[in-house]
Amino acid sequence: MNGKRKSIRPVSIVPTTAPAQAIDPEKAWQQVLARDPAAGFFYAVSTTGVFCRPRCSSRRPLRANVRFFRSAEEARAGGFRPCKRCRPGTAYSSPLEKIRGHIEANLDRQLPLAELGRLVSLSPFTVQRLFKQALGVSPLQYQRALRAANLRGALKQGETVTNAIYNAGFGSSSRGYDGAQLGMTPARFAQGGRGEQINFTTARSPFGWLVVGATKRGLCWLALGATSPRLRPACARSFRWRPCVAIRHFHARGSGPPHGR
Image 1 (cartoon, one colour):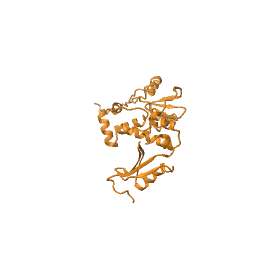
Image 2 (cartoon, rainbow, N blue to C red):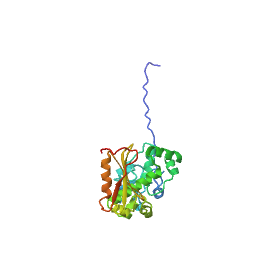
Image 3 (cartoon, rainbow, N blue to C red):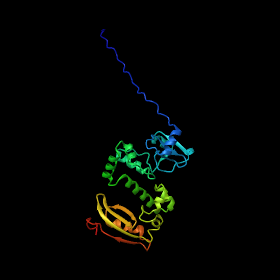
Image 4 (cartoon, one colour):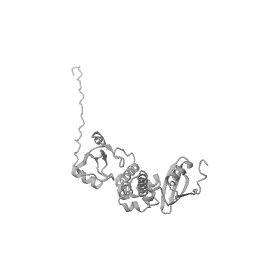
């Protein structure tokens, strides 16, 4: 060696990434029509300014009004806002959250446990067990409760019965009209429960005070609150504005005296 140190020039390594695969519009459209839960893109509707996941239960738009995006960020950059039903901008941090999101985005159709299991790579039995442990209800019961809550809200906002039924996620009008979801027919619910006898009870729960109202046909009211006295008037106000509605109060067994009395 001549005593001189050779300078070693660092070699910069530039990572190479494969170009993003282009979306096949026709294939993507078929996945939207099928509400494919495995579809890895988003679609936006130019007439509404909203973008969705392909599995969203909203009504299918006209093909001419649809654009496809690889990510939620691209859709936002294109001037579209996320759908409130399927929440396409939400990142799910656990299998349970992903299952809940899938149910909430597909209220208008049956969701077999096998489909929910494939979504998170779990067996149908495990999906049922984990969901019930966390929420206290099965995936099917959760879906029915969401549809019923949407229907109540739509009717209270003054929507027509037919629009409220379909917008709540019912696949057919007969399912909404049977009255099992509201404890009475939708038309009677929209009229404040006119002619119905409604019994309700309060009880403590791990989440606070619970009030449940029911008719002979089923539940018509369910709410949580910090104190029992606040819940009872809320239930009464939802129905008693018609003079022919009778509300009786039965205290839940074993729940102790209502808080604040």
